[in-house]
Length: 361
Image (cartoon, rainbow, N blue to C red; front, side, top):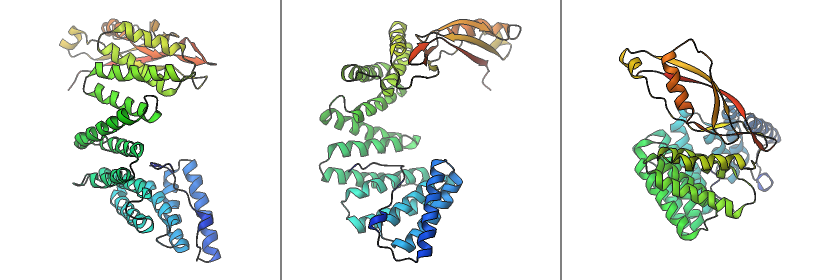
């Protein structure tokens, strides 16, 4: 069974339910639950919350408070709650955890998803308690089952949750490090979960300005895909794009160019993709403009080549902000893009940009 279905729609065990409510209540529940599913599909958050609560209340009448269906409906309602209901969300997830413990036991793997959700809700609430005790309980379940992959995935979920809050950065780092250790020791290099974690580690290293470490990790991802797949994967494009920026940051434009070219040669998973910026060099503020506190902007049109370079730069407001035009063009020439793909082939594409020059207050 695949646990860590964190954030997804909880399903109902309708065929196994022991139904006690009247036919009218059952009919109303069916209508409400179908409307809820439609609200989810249409991304109508207001209706989703309203209908999730109604389905949960009706579900308690039909199945009883301790039934798995009711717990799933409660999870749907908790997930649909807006940020202003953070207190209510935490309280409801605690009920779900307690109900799951009674139904399946305190060491059951069914507890993992509710514990992860409770951790996230607690962190979002911003209480003194960070939620570590809940995620650590989930990790302990995986350890007791001696399921190393599950343990790695739970640590990874913890890292992602705690990275959302700056004050929990050290906790996030610890969970990410543990994930990486488990993956390195027990998972093959081409395991998709390990590659996803590698992307996060590379991002962490970049944030710490350890660009060479990030480059090593990203190159490993690219090599794994090159050696194991005969088609291009979105993660490979993402790794190439991050390598473009990383190499530019360490002053190795030649290596960055190689990855731009590699992107242009990829066969994308989607035949038609718009050009996407990978690396942007900020312009140098003209000294005289800064001395006289002058601000301005430059509007530019340019072509992104199939290799992701910028060519054919044209100033669209040539009579304005003349002193800012030269540094804008110089910076733009350093930009790198993932090219536009049409029918699976990289093609030239026109783009426009406005580069603003603003002095700090």
